[in-house]
Image (tube, rainbow, N blue to C red; front, top):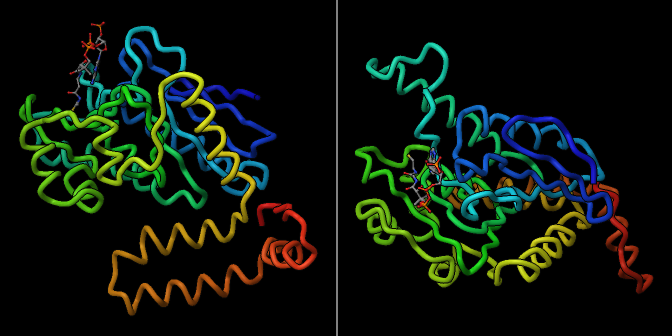
Length: 275
Ligand code: COA
């Protein structure tokens, strides 16, 4: 494992598993998010964009929690909105939200698989951060929710827009209107959480196993799949199918396709190189 220097996050690379772990590292604030935090997450991710040895990202809360385990308790309520942003000027607040959207969007668009590994609270902007990941793995003690309504605000980091697409309007209305915390087990039953485990070793092993599988897969295929699923499903089927056709063409040029098919014919395990 190697480390980089960021202020709000910690970055480690698992060379063997071919994935990077980005940990939100503000344990005294339950990993509350500032614009700087999501910018650092996005910067760290994109530093691996062309790196064939890092083919999957795990985004999580720090293992070294000081108070309560948390993925993130959402927007940092103790922080200002950013230099020059005046909270009493409505357009400044819209621009402040636009800045956050930019980084959430960049994280969502990252072309390799991103796993949200959730242990503890995933609230507000923290829950919204899981929404821009591809796969959510959670411990049974975790909770997801939007507490914003209790503070007279609302989940504007994509919460109202993205969550309904996953769990449906009725459940999302309930979560947001009543600020309800939903257990990981419930989110698993609703299909939002893909894998669930007891906290500790079982969770750590599950996350490492899934990241290793994706980290050793054929990256171009995964990129094309991600674009088709995330963006091809937002347009009419006839247009989405065009994504598949073009993506199929792009993927066919990847060395990993040759490796996958040759390995099958030779009855051996493929060794994908990530391009
Ligand atoms: N922003 C800034 N600091 C936060 C925070 C946030 N969103 N969430 C938690 N913290 C800090 C607390 O101020 C506290 O710091 P302190 O020990 O120095 O006082 C520390 O994290 C632990 O939080 P605490 O409230 O004592 O833990 P808890 O287990 O009793 O409650 C929560 C946990 C998450 C339910 C509660 O902290 C909470 O409601 N946080 C705000 C969540 C929220 O509204 N998010 C959306 C923001 S738009």
